[in-house]
Every structure is written in C-alpha cells, then in structure tokens.
Image: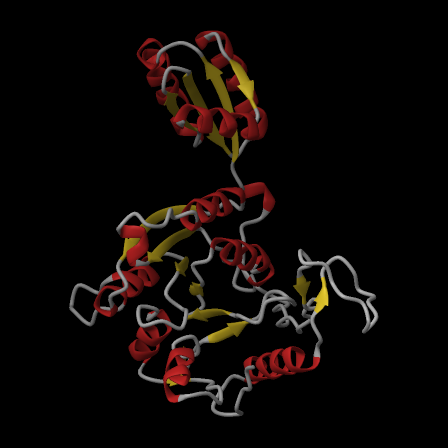
Length: 325
C-alpha cells in the first residue's frame, strides 16, 4: 500500500498522488470479466482483476500558444539507457517521435542515444554536452528514459542538479524505498509540470519551454507524446509536408540517373527525392513536399519512368517489414 506525505511538491502532482493513494486504498479488486459479483461467488481460477479507470484532472491548455507568431520548426531526441546501447532493448521511441515530427511538419534534426551516466546527460564541461546543447540548438527536445525508481534512473536528478534546485514528493515508506521513489520526483525548480491524460499520473516535465522529459516505456511515451499536442505550438496544416511513395521492382542502379536528374529539377521547389531499396524486393522512391498537387504530378512521372506504382504508407511499411525478415 502506498501513502504519500504532503511535502515540497507541485500542487497538481500532490493532488494526483493523494488521489491515486486513496483510489488504491478504497477500491476493492474486481474481476475484469464482471463488475457484479456477490460475496458468496467464487471467481474462476483464470479470473483477472483490475481497478476502475483513473480520472485525474488534465492541466489547462494555454489559450495563446502562438502569440509571438512562432511555432516549432526543428526537434531533437535524447534517448537515455544502457539497455539501448547494449542491445537488450530495441529503441522504438525515437522512431515514433520521428513519425510524430513528420506528420506535424517538424524537422527532426538529431537523435542521440547515451548511457545512464550523469556526466553524459548534463555535463558541466565547456563543450556543453547532450541536453543543454540540444536545447540551445533546436525548438523542441525530448528525452526518453531514466525516470524510474532504480539506481540508473537519473534523468530527473541530473536535470534538477543542472538547474541548481529541485522540488520533490516522498512516500511514507522505508528509507530505501523512499530514496528509490525520490528518483522519480526530483523536478528542476523552474520546470513546468504538465498532466496530459486523465488516466496517467506521471506528468510531462518541461524545461525552458523546450525540453520535455518522458518515460522510456514505449506505450507510455507514445500516449503522453500524442496527448501533449495541445500544449505545443505546432506548425499550421498548410506548412506540413506530404509524402508520396512509388514502388518499383527495378534495381536502384537502373533508376539512379533519372532520380539524380529529378532531384536537381525539383530542388528549387523544396521537394526532396529519396530512394530506399528493399533486399530482393525492389525500391521505394519517396517524394516529399508541401505542395500536395505538385507531388502527385511528379509521382505520375516517376511511376512512368521507373515502371512502378504509388503505394500507401501502410503498404510501404508492411513491405519494408517483410524485406527485413
């Protein structure tokens, strides 16, 4: 059982933790397959139990995100974890973030993976390592990982130390357990604490209006990122790129001269051409630009020249996955 003490802490964080503690203490476990069950009823051996859904308050969304006429143009991601670098865990968060950025018209410029090392996350050296360097260079920066209770979860603590102050919540547990939980609650003093979903008590912690700290669990990272959208000054719809893909069974060497010439012709229009071979399958030609009509026009030309056909994003992804197996 978890009980939370009222100590130095963001008010909304305290409210959520208090509500969570009360919810756990007061709510009886119920079989997932049935909400109505008499005291005399014996649940089957395979019955699973679950708590009713949580319903926390979401942080208020700022009314005027783009008062200064600026929106996010560039982004970077800092993936934190020894398990990524030693191959134990496949990093899915950077891929999801890349898709998020593309769909919303943001140029993802950099992705870095670093170890669970405080000196790597926030170095005080003149070279200005990792997070500080990214914040100085890009409009929107996310970190993923390193905010759990174990010894190698040091993101909050490192960034709090970087700012010189922190605030924390502590549970009424043993000293060892309290120390472990403090690792998840050391927020830099100047941080924004943004609760983006009613069923998640973990907040997105944002520093300097740019650096957003996320957990590393992919399902949690993805849900929190998607729900953060109302709190971000995203580019308007008309500035978001459109991508068209054409698949051909011809080898890449056969279509390379045409694609080289095409890229030279359309570069002044801001259209990018790419080719991506799939082993023993063929090649995907990608056309990306802001003018959807112009991209479709060029797609027809590409289909004819490479003896190919336009495919959907879902179809292209499915074929790429098959090509990797």
